[in-house]
Length: 287
Image (cartoon, rainbow, N blue to C red):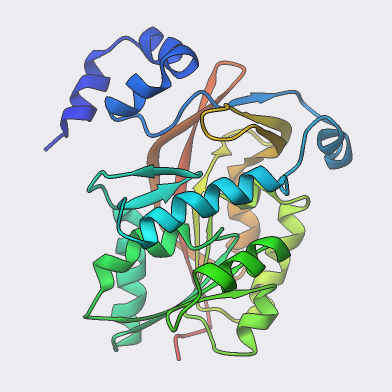
């Protein structure tokens, strides 16, 4: 059954949402839009050019605002956080949870080992943890930039949630069942080069989540402009070719499931929905 927010959005002209994302972000969020007017500009010839035209990912205000939001979630003041904005909605990331439960079911025990590349300060972990609480043991390793790892270890790390500098650091401690990349591939300087490393790590499952792969044969490099109500920032962002990314991954992985997300980005008036892609290695099996 559709939620109240979904019904309202279905009956509301798109022009209202386009205006609201720019001028009335609070109203948009109250009516079920957990995104605001994030803009994508330009068509840059290189990552260096896009980086020069933006502020970058490592601005200290991004980390500090994310830390403050997630401390509220950790203390139980809010249910979850996304993009440094907290929410008390009972909504859960059901497509992602379905994939994680499939991984756990195939593995056949009540332990789930996740390598969360670009997982901030544990955003996805905190959103999912109550779903698994008491019935499963989570071993959730976030791989992040040095500043995030330092803050994560100081303020959030415990027996379930750990912070590491690289996937190799995670592999030195345990064999993950799944590598999760949620809302991160499009911000890497060389997404294709990163994905080339994936088969060598031998991780049985790969989940590519909140990723705007568009249906064009070419990639486009833009600058993402984040509105002030989230935090003042801008950074390079790819719209990657779905055909190219899926073709590269399916050399070693089988695509088991694709789930579109209600979150949609716009570039030059073209709507590009975020999606989840669930891949299983063709030969590697869970330990």
